[in-house]
Image (cartoon, rainbow, N blue to C red):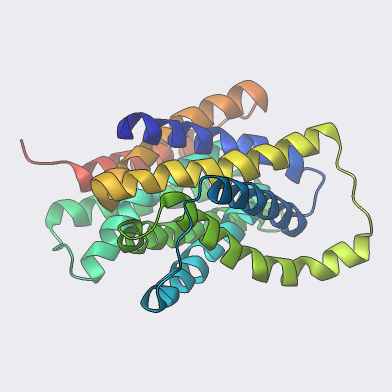
Length: 288
């Protein structure tokens, strides 16, 4: 059951960039992300209260909630939304595959794991892959937008690796639904403050059907359901094992970008994507 949930999360996140780009084509990224966070929080709060899965947060856990919220999920949300806005949906999905590498890096830095030649080689391959993806984009010359998008996505994925590693202790004391609800709320507050001038300046906002679908999917599925499924995986099989399932997202993302948005990857980008996936495989390959 756990593996099916993680495959579902990988599918949700794999096609998420493609669906987000529908809304981001006409909506300011800051406003867009605030709206999807607000929707995700309201839906999560309803489910937590109806399911009676809320328990008081212990004083010693409050700092961890704030840390994984602001230090991990907040940075991820900002970097991911603006990154998707500035790059192709296919590229956004490929960079999701960096998660296992970043989880390994964090584990090495925090001395939870030892650095080996195999891991060093895998990390180097993934870094070279990202550089190839960056250099292969035709939009690099257009005001650096593409380059900025790739860098934001890499930063976002590292931040999500921080969240994946450090949220696990909380999963032993609170329901997954409550954890996700609290983290979304912590992230929503600064986004509301930052985006307030944008909302005030632009006045009333009535999204079209396509924009509503994009916000609805990205909020309910992309943020809420995807993270609930993912956190269940972290709780049951750990951060490293769970992070491996992000390798499936590029497959779904590239297919969706090709079929729906008619995106085409340049040869160097394809080579870069292959290097990223190869690096992930090398880092996590177990001895026979």
